[in-house]
Length: 148
Image 1 (cartoon, helix red, strand yellow):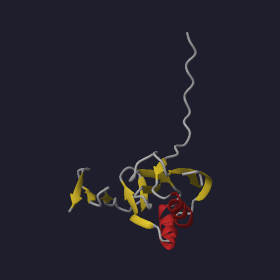
Image 2: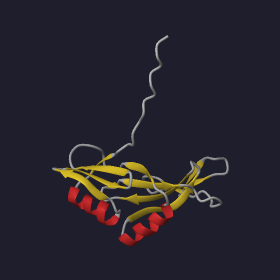
Image 3: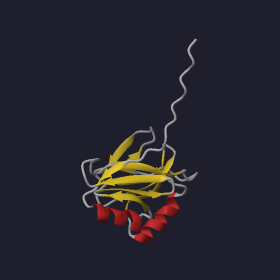
């Protein structure tokens, strides 16, 4: 009998976001969001905070308006920190039924960073803001309905 194949181990994902102005984006990610520059070459850079890394590309990688989820220890504390630094808060920390409490922040190119931590027990599930800015509310049957 052949040996079973070893399970493939995956590492962390590092998204690549397309940016229109690399220096402007680096300023926002470092000064406002608290990331640090990990490396930078012509038209390309990587920023990191804790174990999270995001690549920023001036060229042809990625598309404007990408959404990404980043795990954090405390979305509420991050919300307070980022408000004080002038971050563009798209949605304040909110509990969601998938077990995440998320803070949504927008960068200069319209990318949405969803910073998620554990839900706060006893706090209700909040509304969802879609890519067009429409608010959706969770219904008792588990479906979502646009609140227009």
